[in-house]
Length: 192
Ligand code: 5GP
Image (cartoon, rainbow, N blue to C red):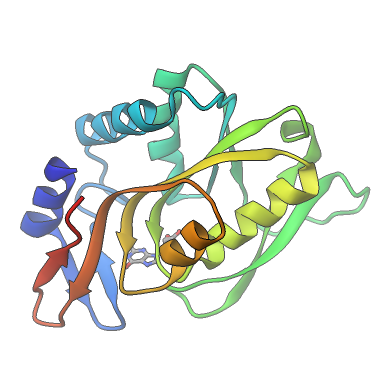
């Protein structure tokens, strides 16, 4: 998506450890008009796929998910990272290794909000090695929910997450794919 690539080029910052910082518009300060356009694009890509719920992970996925849900007119549910005890077995849970923080955390999602009746579009801001997505897919599998597609704002194509998911047969759509990123800030996008 040309518009997103332009914003990454003009405002993104490359940080050591293959981290791309886009907190001016995507995951700290939020450009709502841009997010709306991302939502519109996800709708165009998945509108024929019978999606009845959008699933994401807190915190950065939530804004993108909400803007997209306005187009689909479906609810958003997000996996929580906060510790939550599974005393009565009332939540699905999975362990995720964080790319940006380098440690493991648990995600939880109430069993009330995901089940076999759901066909979900999973959305997130970034896809790197795919650990967060793996946790969300695990939660869907536990719930018996069908995965209709995976939508990502920015995929780092030089890490294996996206290509692995495509090889597994998922319909993965990333609105910008960064194939190369150097410490001095040069970026190369995959032509789409
Ligand atoms: P993965 O689990 O695919 O390795 O990483 C995806 C998660 O890590 C995303 O939810 C995102 O929050 C975070 N992440 C991964 N790479 C980056 C990056 O380059 N920049 C930012 N801002 N977040 C990232």
